[in-house]
Image 1: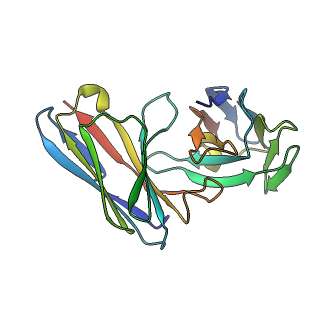
Image 2: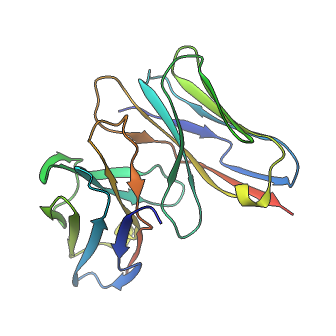
Image 3: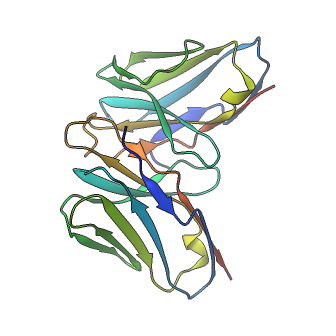
Length: 111
Length: 114
């Protein structure tokens, strides 16, 4: 069973600050996804990364997939209150049809 | 609005009750999923259906019984649950069960077992 560890578990920052959350594993993934979940809602996909070393940008969000495809990071620049939520990473091995999720990082952006 | 709806949104049930959770997707997807989300724990995959056939049962106790009557609807029948079964139950769908396809989640049913 793959284990995805996310850190930190909780993060509280002031609006305008930057933040980075991490997703690490000892397993190799064929693809890795990042989701954001807001209170009372289900997770919503933000991005999928598939190539080792890949960097994807989504406005103020930058996603990086590690060279060895075992880890990933999400960096938010100039955070806004609307970025508040639970950030989940999820990955699948090349020979596995199951998506494994991390426990998530709860991000709170204060006004 | 993700195109996946779940009812009820909240459910309180006793350990001897029988209830059902309903999920409906309006996306024309072929795969549907049930997940359990507990506080501070990773999402746990419970069941996967592909083209109405159950293809994954992730060691889920028999007190949870899924049903997929057609590709748009998924049910989770509950009976004689335990307090530790209290959690958010999420339904999701995707075009194909291959995990490279995006999964669209419903808002979940918040279940409390008393």
